[in-house]
Amino acid sequence: MASDDSEFVHMALGAAHRVASAKAAKARRKKSKPGSKG
Image (cartoon, rainbow, N blue to C red; front, side, top):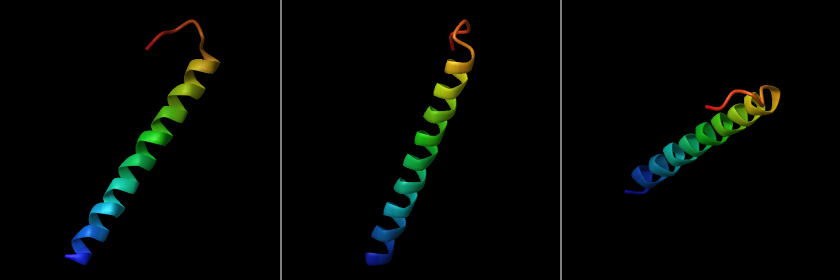
């Protein structure tokens, strides 16, 4: 049970990190190209 919980937390953290990095990359792209919306 404990191992399952830790694995779930690990996956959740990984997903959150991916989302955060994707948002940061999108923000950077938007800043460099203010004319294009996407």
